[in-house]
Length: 113
Length: 110
Image (cartoon, rainbow over the protein chains, first blue to last red):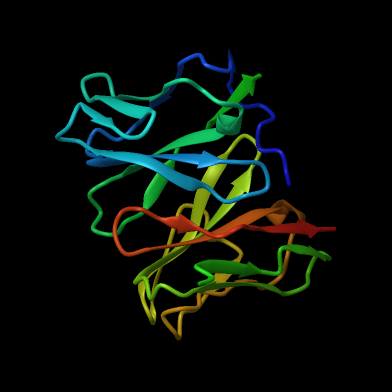
């Protein structure tokens, strides 16, 4: 599939390490945030979401942190595995009434065995 | 249980030709979306639809036309393709805030 990783920020980690992927969002009125994972040649896949009234949400091996003061979102992946290698996007939803997402430009995560 | 499908998966066309990309979902989701993905730009919304016969422009609608006569289908048409429309196109559907994406169509305009 097409490489969307060129020109993207890249995070390289060793298998078993914890990974932290950061995202700055622009709209202070956004009330919902999602992290997506995109593997090469595939469409984005939902990982975890968080509402603006929360600071932290945990899933299986993933945690999302939201800092509304500085408009910053992070995705923490515990015990990173080679299968986690992908491009990760944060996305925000404003209060437009429709569920339109605004995506960040993405970060490529490379996990070495 | 197909979920959301796109066709064709790959398409090569020439400048000035009309091209239609198809999107079909089996979940009866109300919302459907078309995005394009380009290096350095991430995913950008072209058009979206809240229900059959309701469509609206996204961030980059110029040069594209959509229709939604049935809930399950949301075709995207490039009326006169240009080289700048070379991209990977993703369709998505949702009933809540979580959008489910199709596998994408890689379009090359020569």
